[in-house]
Length: 323
Image 1 (cartoon, rainbow, N blue to C red):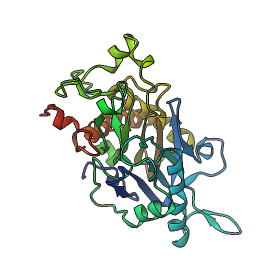
Image 2: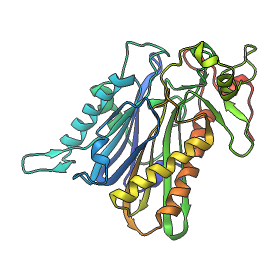
Image 3: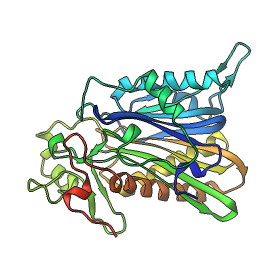
Image 4: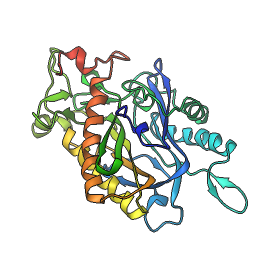
């Protein structure tokens, strides 16, 4: 167990990172296929192939999930993931061809770095070439390269965020894991203490303000919030059908609500994908409960592993210290 989503057998993770432009993409490969579901709780999503994740849809399995920067432009990176999979013979089998199924979600990072550079097909392909089932890089990498949080006072007062991953093993050899990119409108908090770990920075640059309190003061009306989102993937080696895996994605969203305040806003496109790989038996209520926990842990890691980039400080530069 390496405390990453790659602890689930059959999953590989690859990043494409452009630190100069502060953008990138991340692919979660499950080349042999994984039963997939999804849940969208935010009101400003940017997604691809999410309709086929419904339990009533024909296709049961996907071969990859793409998370990308670049706003809606970044959805083009999925074409590169499809090319990679097609070249290797992976996809939904039809009488004519195997068609790789690659749902995707994007985040808005155009206000950080260069707004003219966005991940496309070549960057998606490069992320696949970099994919591994070993260590998973965290922080300002892949889709998390341009991620920020706490933007109610504008991007100049925001805090650098990134990408985090986590896993848990439970009874029966079951593993539940998550990979999350945190580009939230609100603050990331420690759910145990309520402490703000990252959010809009105080004018002094040495502390954080509360987005929730600023909203109550009418601050949101003075600053048009940049588009935001928290997107991610949860995965398990338990055997689930499409209805159950969709429930897993829904319950995993609770992890966002615990660690981000406020979450699921009109300004966020919060989207969660879920993958089932394996034949182990487990109760969906147990799996969903653990999924929320690993999502919360992955969100906090996205903050603690982030570094200053594109002129924006990470939380550790603002003065927060973790045990």
